[in-house]
Image (tube, rainbow, N blue to C red):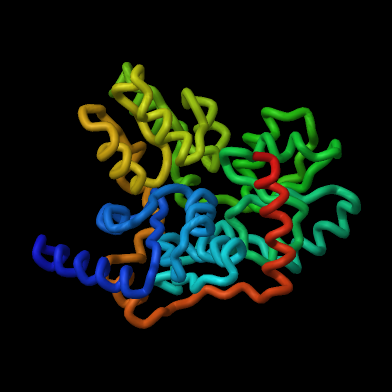
Length: 305
């Protein structure tokens, strides 16, 4: 896209955003140009909370489907738009509400913690939600020795190393983070001996073991801003590097691989954001009975602070 076309698209998006009284949210993994036109950039729950606190009548969520659903759960009185209806999450699709109900029958009385990366119907069947940042805290808050954790086995395994509780893990995973291998970290450590290494807790245990920290995207951004961090190997989706470099000029951020890309996150473009505002579509709506029950699981998490 040339500079003129991009400038024209940005101007038209800004005009329509004002006319619709809309707020644009972009996840840290979105394309650079989409991040740049957003009112807020962040991780999924943080963005939904910002949307709920805003006065906008329309929420344009540049992310994937479960994120837009979470915004709709927290802001049922707003129109929530997902600029590409096909922007899904393979991990979220690895569990259904019916599968969870069957598993709960196998583990009677065991509380269910669901990662925020799940469909609304799964949240509605869960006792409490968690994020990659607060998973340990959420599990610790439960008055139970055993916990069923869905759907990410790798995040669940990471949490299990930090709690004495027994976690029953669902065999789901993020295909993007699963592509990061221990040898990728070892190779870059040899190439950049002074660099720190941060990886997402959705990574494989062998990858986490080689990192200095396993952090959520928000945690990675705070780590990148530290005075003592000048060079950082980043083990997550490469979209976050745009924001890291923008907020920390002069520092060196090294992706584990240029191939660590989420194809669903990259489906949203400036053209699709504009079309979404023009047509007020595709709209994400969560049926009220499911929304109310899902909100209970999210609210329990938020009550922990």
